[in-house]
Structure formats: structure tokens, C-alpha cells
Length: 445
Ligand code: GLN
Image (cartoon, protein in one colour):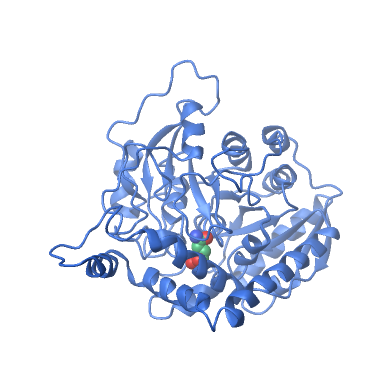
């Protein structure tokens, strides 16, 4: 709590700080019992307001916990509150939050990334031991990378989405951000697994992630480098750190092969926006949060509540999403995107046939100055070029810090991408890489 009080005025990582965190059940045997953590504010928490960083949800206070929250509470987790994000998790900078942007604790003039920017900012400076975020197109891996922490987007279906406020339902996954591979493994082991309340949650048993993280392995592993991820666009200082990490992996006995993943970005935005426009239809001024004042008829209530309640980026996506789904444009955009999505998945599966996991940069650049993309959303969308396609393919990705960039002096992360439900394999490889690299420590605010 002391660290939160000291850092919050600077990094604005929290939207809501818990008054007096609930004491952990005294007898919980879980190693997570009593450990301070926090949730991205798009996870429903019973009795604590859940804003999605939007005005439209206002002081919406859920009457139930998300499954991930329920499981961690049962394990004795101590929630310190709710973490900042881009409004409805739509963005890569944390700047579209109605509650003001979160900032990167390594340099407060820079963005922590997004959308789980508050989660990464809080973990990176030790306000919480770990955080729970969500990743639709990179929102765990990218802020983890820009803030120098570790995070995993699990396979689609590994973690129940019950109680996660939906952005793109076929892309969203919940996962942990922490300080090490072992911590992420431990937390994922608690939240993963079948849940009757989410029909897309997979029933297969959860592997022993703790054991995986405790058995680091690089020797003899085949790591694939997707060549499109190392092409033009990757900043030289990021490339330099990535190459060093690749050399380290090689020195530890990993075999490095080149693979190819030709299709990427536009497909994601068509699908994500289409799903967002449908998911966000429920925020109508009637059932949740903000309601426009002095309205005379029903249509006006919807229009004014939504106009006042949603921010600009969310409105842009609802409009574009509605457009690509509308009759006459559906075939040209949405159906095409769904077909390309299948191609992307096939490309990933073919690449993963040739190796145990892929190793790639997470972000083409290190954390950028706040505000530098606000005039041009397309520039911002390009920042996600290396993270989006993984969600389309539904595969798991573990992002971990691999060093500091020479010029910007900001953290650089890389992601290990694995076969479906091979989180354990990623933890073994990630632990191996982590042990072989010098580590970057915590930010100091
Ligand atoms: N930046 C991407 C987007 O804006 C991904 C965000 C996310 O993963 N929630 O859609």
C-alpha cells in the first residue's frame, strides 16, 4: 500500500485503489495467499466498481466476480484494486482511459503500452507482485514488453472469460503479468481450467506450470524466427537487443531456424471491430452506468447516453465494426477477414511444425512518448504488428524482458509463441531464456 501511495501520483496505474484490502484467509495453503496483486479494470469484481476506463460504465459495481477473480480470491490473493487500461481495452497506449493515462515507470513521459498499461506499470515498479490483464491483440504482451515485465497470453479457451467485459470475444484471453516466468506460471496455474460458465473455455486438464517453470530448457530446443517479424520496421535498437537474446539462446544449445508468417494486421482490426460493435451494443444507458439527463424519448436516451458515455476511439471502432458487418459490405470485409484468419492460423501451425516455439520481438519500438500517436490511429495500429496475429490463431504467447535498448534506455521484450495448450513448454523455454539473460530489475519511480 505504501508503494501504491508513493507511485500512483506519478504513473496513474490504478483507477480504483482498494480502501483496506481484504485480509487473506488465514489457512490458505496456496503460495499466493497474502500476496498483493490487482486486476485490470475490465474484470468484474463483486462490490468494487468496474469501469473499463469508460465514462459509460460510471460507477457500475458488479454483483459477481469473474471466474479468474473468484479462483484467485479462493487462493488467498489480496487485491489492491483495479488497474488502468485503454477504454474498453481498445488501444495500445493506455491514453484513451477516461481516468487519465497510465504512465511508464521507467520514464513518465512515455506510454506504458496498452491496453493493460496500468497492470504493467504497477508490476514494473513493485506496486503489486503480479496483475491480471487481458489480451485481445497484444494487451498483455505489449505493455509487459514496454515496461520490462513478464506476461503470458494463454491459448484461447485456457482461461475462462466469465466476468471479463468483452471486447473481441473470439480473441480475448485473460492472463497474468508478473516479474518472472515462474510467477506467471504459478498464477496461470490457479486461473486456468474448465469453467461451465464460459462455453469457449476448454475442458482439458491444466498442466503443472510450476514444474515447467522450475525445469528451464533451451538445450536442444528448436526456436523458429518468423522472418517477417525481423523485417523493415523493427527499430535498430530493438533488433540489437533481440539479436543478443537469440545469440544467448543459441549459446545455451537452442537450434535457431527461420520460418515465415506472411499475413498480418488488417484482418485483426476487421474482426476485432466487428465483435466490438456487437459486444458494446449492450451499453445503452438503461442497464449500466451512465445515463443521459433530460431525455424525452427512448431513441434519444440511447443516442445521447452512448454519445456522452463512449470516448472517440471506442466510437470509431463501433462505427467501423458496424460498417464491416452491414449488408453489402459483409462479404467484402468480414467474410474475407474470417477466411484470412484461417490462413493465418494455418501459417502458424505450419511454422510450429518446424520448431518447438517461435521467438519474436513483441513491439517494433520501445515505449514511445505519450500522445505521439493520438493524431493518427493507423500509426498506433501498426505498433501491434507483431502481437495481433497470435490472437487470430488462438495460440499462446509468453512475453519476457530480454534487455534494455541502447538509445532510448527502455526495456525490450520478446515473445515465445507455442502450439495450442503448450503453455508448459513456453514456461520451460522462457525460464531457460530468463536464466541465461542478465535481467533488468524493477523501475524506480
Ligand atoms: N491494440 C490492440 C487493439 O487496439 C489490442 C488491444 C488488446 O489486446 N486489448 O485492439
